[in-house]
Length: 286
Image (spheres, rainbow, N blue to C red):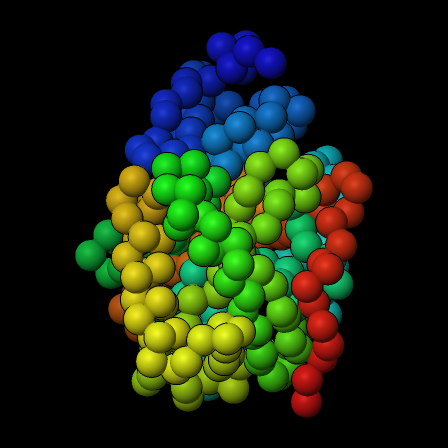
């Protein structure tokens, strides 16, 4: 599929992803063929649409658009998660602190292929709140054979309480086959900081067969690779931005932001075809 056939300006993002902007005034996002956008999202892992008209502040219009992408993954709150700072949040996603790298759907029976994010309000750069992404395919492709083998042999158990709309236990290899079975990707939920145990959804992780001391060293070394600028991208939001993210290949998180900063996102999950079953989800916990 030829990227030049899309009726907008196209710019590659460093170190990965692609940015699309309108070539005509008031261009509507619906004018962009979803088949082509889906192709770009699978090829580049991240597609940022900036400056297009959408009307997605109306949640129903966002849902209508998302349904054109595929089957929407439903949650207890519905189809759209409203991400903004709340008072006394039980979930760290609804506070202003950092969010560790993770993949969505890890505590569900199915894993969505895409996230669609829409920015309603954006903080200024000095206020923080960038969404962070790591391209694990690129990281693995540029790592040594010995490193990849070590990571493939690494089995991690994650646990978190079900206090909001997710929870349970996941036992997963650090490196897994992509659901399409055509490449290797990394599945990791980095530890939360020690002072973030105020959240009821604080998760624990244990690496099978590794002492606590060796696990701490392993986490530190892995962290340095995940945040390597060759594989790590932090997106500064602008009002109206729409991001299409490959949840199978990328890990994502969030930088902390100044409390009460105007940061509000909407998020929708889209299942792939066929729906990806979560083979590593074990059980719900109390």
